[in-house]
Amino acid sequence: MIIRSSAAEERALLKTADAICAAVRTAPKACGIDRMDTAIVTGTEKSEIADEMRHMSEEYGDWHMARDAQNIDVCGLVILIGIREAPRGIGRACGLCHFKDCADAVKNGSGCVFDSLDLGIAVGSAAALAADMRIDNRIMFTVGKAAAKMGLLGDCGLIIGLPLSISGKSPFFDRGVDA
Image: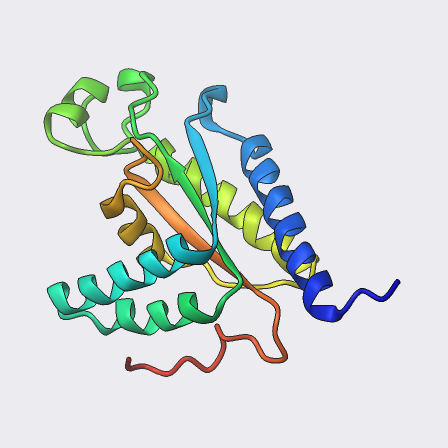
């Protein structure tokens, strides 16, 4: 049997993506509360994210979205990593959000700082695992913003995208400063 590199590389991407979803699940979380969700996006759905990013680039007048959409066009797949935002209920003992307590934070439209911390730890773990597997990747808020707008992770309001790529040269390097 001969397995061509393209088939092996596709399997490696999916195997790595599966392991990344597991790593996000097992990443440490504040107060032991797990509100994380992940999805692996390929094919037409991946293209729809890139299209939404281009639309948002025009809507916001922001070149980052269009530049990053080009990366999504050429990468093998995208992992969405999100969190359902809600206060942890620590109350006055915390105050990291700069409000009196969780109720005051919610009243003023503030997010819980632990949501961002949990997401950051999980995304860092995901990117490190991809790098350990020698899979090119890049953490992209732009992908997450488009995915959130599209409702791809349901009620997860805070999402980060992690595109993965196997190619002769990483598409996430030397990207330039304009679309």
